[in-house]
Image (cartoon, rainbow, N blue to C red):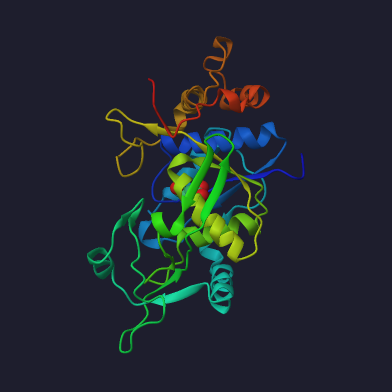
Length: 299
Ligand code: GLU
């Protein structure tokens, strides 16, 4: 195994894997193995209100049925809260985060819309007004452009101040936000290349901004196209995409490989997932993966 490349798959146990999440799992697995790399599994189970009972076991069974076998111990974010707390303290000590007393409604009423919701109007940037109490911690952003060069999607420029605003790193319910935890864990696990769905392309600039603030290394990024269902909507738990059927794992893996521009040869029709993946690892070529943000799923 090449000791340098470390990739990962980081599902949230809010439901079983569906075709969209399987594409991210297959793409990150094959890319890692084609580069003689390690492939780690991280369960992003911090957002407890979103966790669904039984989903974690189902995801593990689905991955095993698809022969997507991970290296090392599974990492559970719910057991790593002290790491996120330490990162927040580091940001606090260097003045890069501020306490914020604003409610969602106050922000919505006094802001313009950015690429992912309202842009924080800056109310608490210089301190919380006397008599009000802090609810969240927000990361300060600046007006400089952040440049991400994605291995598939190309160059992506984002001005955090104009397009996103100061963003939450610890929520009002005390839960650490995805943007902070993903950065802490990718660094702690020594991830060298993040391969995931292009719905997270816009998050990359926030993650790079946090990496700079925490003096962490920025990994390479490769955002795979998102799978679109019938009506052009992203296949997701929210749109009730069906769960991957572990008893039809071969068909599911074959379909994910076709979606990623790597249709296995006819001779492998009905082959075991392990053999389909071995073929893909041998033939993996990023130039064949559609360089699009989203692609409709062909039946
Ligand atoms: N947990 C995230 C999800 O399920 C993925 C995070 C990532 O790959 O950076 O969408």
